[in-house]
Length: 148
Image (cartoon, rainbow, N blue to C red; front, side, top):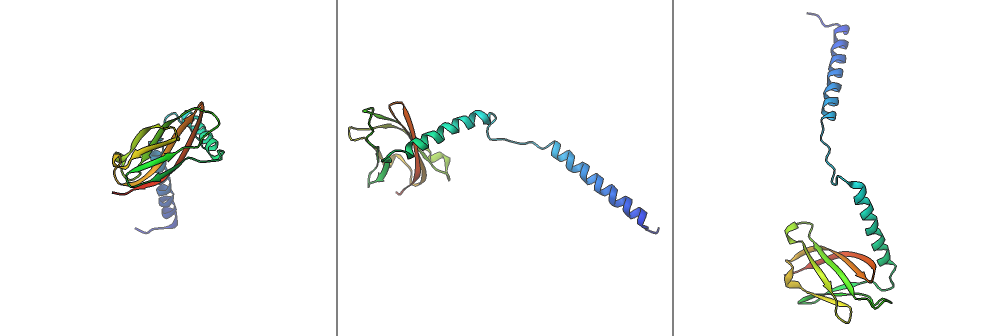
């Protein structure tokens, strides 16, 4: 049997069309997973998070955290209002979700909060500080490393 150009063109065109049909079928039946089903509501919540960060950046003195040999000491700024500072401090370990911990903030008269290092497993954490003074909410974050 002799191959001529007509047969080759028909074979090439048929192969191309069948390949396109397979790709269309696969694309139509592809399951697309989104992280959040209600992403618009999540975006509005995240906008509030951005506003908390901006309020925190606008402060003259930022909250700070220092590691001592036994404790992690958080120091919050003295604001004009005499309201006490409340909130949460969250330790997020990107490499191991079982190390994640959240603690309630309870400050003393010097606006400091101490947390024993022994309550955390050694590792690198992303620190998420959600705090509130009066009715104003703030958010700070940073990186902290706990050594054994």
